[in-house]
Image (cartoon, rainbow, N blue to C red; front, top):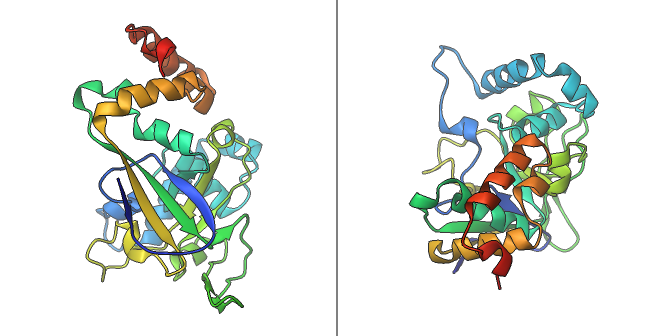
Length: 256
């Protein structure tokens, strides 16, 4: 089952992790700080400051020199940021869509893979803002912010960012990120990504029914899409071992 929101030409990526209901926007926009005089800028800087002060060496080892590079690494370690996780691989996206098979099997719901098609792609940002520009084919290039805290808290279009993949999880998950501006209070649901698509973009949802997720997850495991390959560290190895040992019905070895 699929639902298409808008049309466009360009690059395909798939959402990680997958959400069935809506393509939800970034986690910091879903709650507001409790202190007076707060702003999205102050919230973002405080989150990153606390994350960075105890991970200075780790950030340097992964060459997170720019503000956006640090946000990408922090996002991949589950810090709430203005970024959303995506992958180039439909198999990896399907793994995350079916992850409850291993982690919450008693409460399975339908999963989903979201496919984004966009012409707003950047491999690096400069310290100069790029304005919207009409291209020869009639499409419009996006407004891209400067790579600073103030720039990323200004007015710009959502864009897809490919970081330098130096962290092993980023490498193995074929990671990319959409970078989102601050929420628009005039929208009915500011956390719904589909409401902010440009005409050059499309967002399609593919439903994976709960009834087939166990078989899908087992097939992915047989193809090498596993915890230990996507999370190549002791945590991934432990989760992979737990799933393999507790799946005693033979499905991992006989999946069609």
